[in-house]
Image (cartoon, rainbow over all chains, first blue to last red; front, side, top):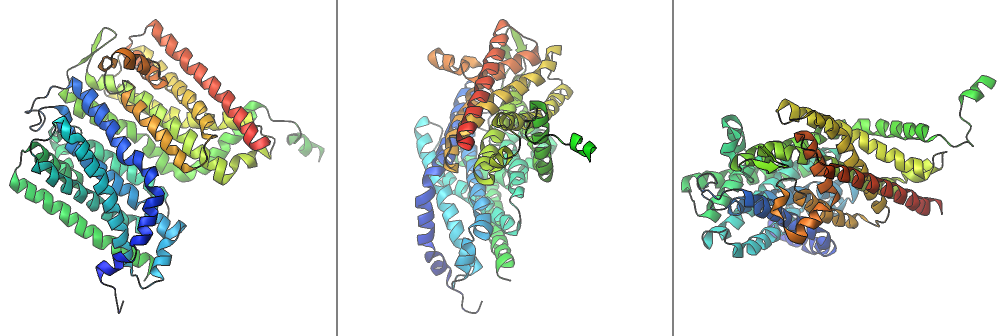
Length: 264
Length: 269
């Protein structure tokens, strides 16, 4: 592209479009954004947690099961929301509603289309995580005031790591059938085995190391260390590095994917 | 020529219910073959939950008392997962899939242009869901058996129990789906599905609730199914098990009547 728009201009020109999308769809998202994780907090954290002893030695430093699962649950929820927003909607832009076709027929490039969509995903994930962390604050599950704030940024970063990579995959997929598989053999096992519900040391050595290489575990563990004030700064550095690296790769992967599919 | 005419069914005579179900099942099988990956992976979901919650979280929990028996947490959760997976599967099949066929594919309009009746459509669709559910439940029970989580011969009846749960929810949810106008209405289903899944004593004993809440939970259909499966795999049966069975049968039959009436109203008037 000879004369590409600056990134901010590229995104800015699509703000009104995504604002309209938001205004028309936010009601449908309320239950998946706020209802679902609230039910999990109640069912798993409070009710099941009532049967679990709040032993910090077994719960990675948490004094109750609720305090243990909340940081992980919010991170896992960020992943889930980001995947939802970058599967069917991306296929819609390419194949069903063809909004990307329309957008690319203007001076916007594939990069701009991806960026604006990702900003929309970011705002969805950020608002859902922020509401959650605020609602949970009075329940005494956080050990410091600054930790949960940093944990919030980590959760959003988890969302972006998954959002960008899945965008790239969706842009390369020809049929929506694959999305069912992404959820069943990707999102669900990640949510269940990346340390959100129980310490990964309960998995046994082999599976524990497998869990350690998943990006979600890095997000869950960092989020938990921040919320429970059990920081190990060198480990935190690794977590952050992994999440940033995955996001950076995903961003490139998504742009390249849409370019290949629709521009080249 | 005359021989051929005898082979072919008379188009003016309705099919027998059995023949109609066979035709619809064959149709579903033909179209579903394309989605075999989704079919196979559907079985994995309850197994993942069993390993994660039952074993991962289970290490944090002492054993539970159930009808006088002491059982490890994983053995307690597994029958809950069996019931919940029958419930979730039935819900998916009888809501999203049925809505799509009814509204977008116009599949039922097409079927009714043949000798099939609305009752055939209802029975045929529910049977298909049941076949799928039965294969998942059977596989899940084998996993439980392999992991030593089954403690009684009564567990053989856990398969029909899972099917009964599937039937009851399929029938009622298919009936409710006929009232839906757009995909936005599915949020209401999630709103019912998720709390039922999480609060029906699937993951923890009913003693977590007390007073009115406990009474309400005990009256929900999924709780009846969960307890029934748990009673069967642990062998701790009681007369309350019969209540669960009757409850689910009545629910399913009422659902079937509703589906038939609604399809008559939507498609034949």
